[in-house]
Image (cartoon, rainbow over all chains, first blue to last red; front, side, top):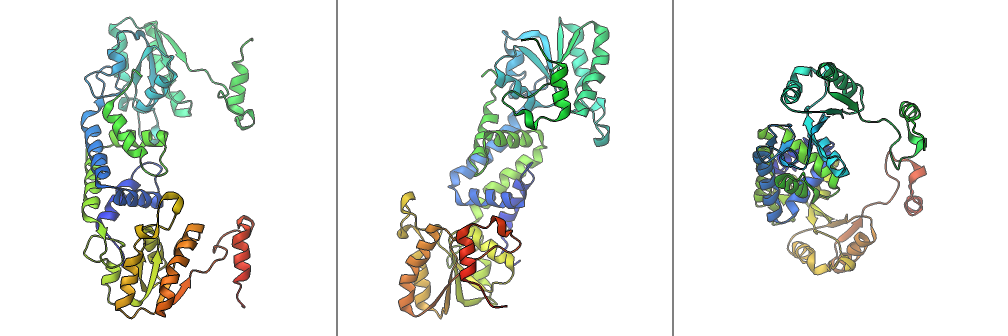
Length: 199
Length: 199
């Protein structure tokens, strides 16, 4: 093509590597940066490098933090006897948004998925077991995604923890609050029926 | 909120400033960058700074370029007697993708929009008039967006060019190729009827 600007193509390519961003959107975003003031590009670039340089995994629960241990683990008011086990660092933020959960977390960084070549040894499972051995943990909430892989991961881990005499719970299944019954799939609806409570 | 990482919030904020990127998407993109390898963040940051530093407006047609004049203006095989007037640098890319247009461009960098405080003086209109006075331009294709503002801009500019004896054309209106008549709005459909051609 006659009209080709190397640095524009390169920026478009970087945007295109982001999840859910296609070729056209990537081009639109690149044009936006180029036609915005220079301060924006500089601040954006600095934010990318800064976040990548400062953020790493919490030594205790493997969620993201810019300190040695994350703010949840460091918070003395959190109940260390309850550990919520999630697959992804993003899930921690989702639980924190509820402002209800007062326990701590453990991030597995994935779920067991043989098809994708992810075996248990690639997840932070032995690190979870190690956390359980030394302290007074009373309950483990298995909060991996409600998918086949998430379920398999939860039951795999449960097998190790059950013998330790620690209570293991799983998130409740049911219809989403504010959702529309019409759009609920039959498996979810069956789970909601099975788990029905007296009012 | 207990769980707050400053550099993560800052990166999320920068993503959120992009057009069409909401809070949740911005967070997802920020997490993606943080959990990707370091080389990606570095390359992305470099691409942002590089594109912003190198790309500026073509001195002749005001499209984007990393040279003094853009590759279209610099191409001796392009017909300099036809100028396609567009509102946005992105529109040049859209025309170039057709691989049909062999003339050159002029980018206005906006359309007249009194409600947004954009008057004719903020657009590259006098630069267009200047281009016409010194060379043998035979035709101006008004290719501003088919919106109220785009139309107003096209007719505003036409008033200056008509007295110069230069042919002025406007893009044809009609139903989009590959589109579905069912979804065509009545104004477009009327325009397609009015502009019908014998087959």
